[in-house]
Amino acid sequence: MLVAAAASPAELERMLVRRESGEPLAWIMGRTRFAGVDLHVRSGVYVPRPHTEPLAREAAARLPAGGLAVDLCTGCGAIAAVLLAAVPSARVLATDIDPAAVSCARRNGVDALRGDLAQTLPPGLEGTVDVVTACPPYVPDADLHLLARDVRAHEPLLALAGGADGLDVARRCVEAAARLLRPGGWLLIEIGGRQAGTIAAHMERHGLAAVHTGRDSDGYDRRVRARCVNTGV
Image (cartoon, rainbow, N blue to C red):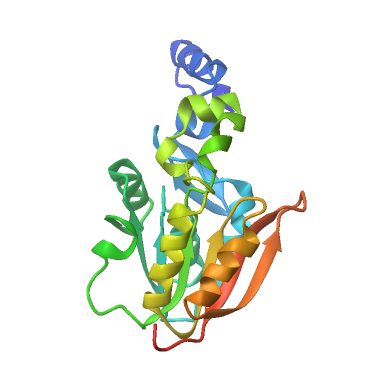
């Protein structure tokens, strides 16, 4: 792959050195493929993982034609780009606190806003959104040292560290979704292992029901889906 991408032997050598240091291949190539969508990925921005693809596809299946979706913690805009590709008539907004991620998402055709979760979204969206998605940082701080060495060395801590139990940002995503979703709207959020019960209980406290957990190919809880039923939140 690197051989085909390099314009010269000198460039190939530079690319190989970067890869040998553990730098993500997507950064070196400047692109990756996610759920059938080609994405630009710049250095310093979290690289979307294959285990997130089922969440993106399920969210796309639940987004109606002409609907409205919000993707929190969008990163390079992977989930949002899948939603746009699957439902071109929908309006998809995305947010991220990292300016590099926002710039990358915009290059991928996503209407991305820089800010903390829903704080920079346009006014008047509360109670109107069909689908909210989120892939927040969810690694407990005490477990960060267990991540692969290359991940620890290169990928942004902001996209990984989730606080004491890994759910600091995830809880806030749930609370934001509870305000944004219309009755019957859906939240789909990615989590780490052993976090499903805790985040599901938080969802229910905020008027989200019909909670369902999806597992990855290794049998680990990886995503949680819930529906807005509380119009008073």
